[in-house]
Length: 577
Image (cartoon, rainbow, N blue to C red; front, side, top):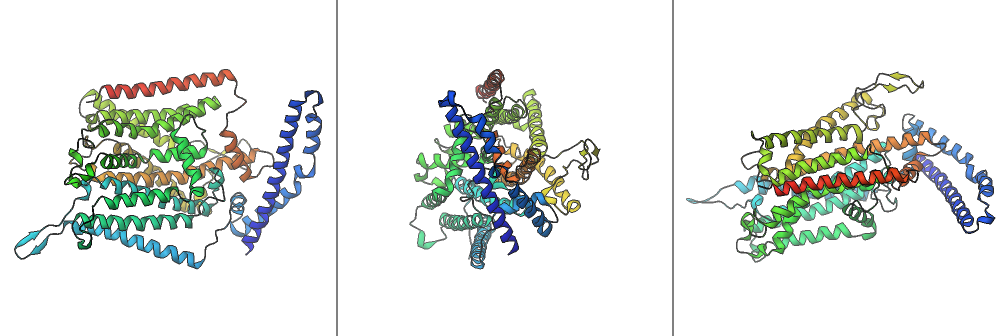
């Protein structure tokens, strides 16, 4: 097709430019090494200008060909939008056959059927009373009180995240957001949305079948499996999901290494991919606590006790008064926020810039302090007339509003209160077409009036779900929603936070793409994709232009900030109820 031919030609131009740039970089490094070893025979100042003037370095013909391809592609397929054309020309079209679509279709259909079956068995059929003569038999099993529910709840949340990731990849590709290069992912190992959906559907089928079998065994509904220990099925599910998480290792390696780097913060490098993954991890606090309780349940031996399915809350190893709930759950609840805070402080030290890194670190430090006081002092979250309860509620509101402001203004580039610069005249400001929104909206391309509402809805949804997420960190002992509802609402909170984080990711990548596109406009002759790669490579490394005094000052400020956050956590632990 014409699209495929233009993409192929454009890709060859980019490859040729990259090859020329690689040769020039090699020349620079070789000359630099030569002059360092033989300072008396230095030739860099004489040779480098000559090399820079050669045709392969100037590549004016290639630039003209690429510019013409971008213009023609934009006119033919994108209503004249050459900026988006630059990205779409570099993105290879997925090769999906009709058989691939059929394969994915029946998997998704089977997964949906299993999910509906689970809802029927747990919510509807689980409350049915069966009549036999004059005797009433209630064959029920309260899965929400079963310790194994923590495992199914956590794995279900991760599966929802996988489905959302497939939707994100599809959306970014559709609007021309080059997420692969923004996150510095190897293009050969990146998964298309079809591959993500295929993986998600397979895991969902296994999850749904396993959950149904466990639930029916627990209710004694399966005569052919009466001798099966009910804890075997959850362990088989966990083993399968761990296998799919790690293998194929070549494709999963970059993601696993990134997660390890996040765990090592602030001692590991910090790039956009690392901060993005760390933000996602902060949204999975409930998932990590559920996995911790599952690990405690199996390692302590509670799963082999008589009537183990109903022993969770009273267990000395994993119950309400256990070390797991008193110490480890509070630590796991705030550790993701600590990692993200440390990433901000590392960037502050590397660049020497207080803004935005210290302000961002303060956001995570404040959220961590609010959460840890509620975790160690559950009565605070219920408010009350005590000064401590009122102070906590005020800090909760401040932290939530701060996070909302940062999401909308800094991460999404919205909440623009000033007039926009006129693209036709330098230094002239004009009224914005849509109040609070930036002029470039990639999700509203060609239909701004209809789709601009999407951005306003996203801002409202974000602040509502932000408050819900912060309250979800409060332990169930505090019961901020009353009548013991938080135990049942916990999976709903986890699901809503994953959906909110997915929505946040849509606009976060859009803003990052536009920022790097503006960087390209200020660079002489660089292409959008090249700037996307180069900008993150440079920002991920220490800035050599920052003087030692400024860097030392930033380092001391970062240490002081970290000590303050730790001190607040210690005070919260010492004043534990």
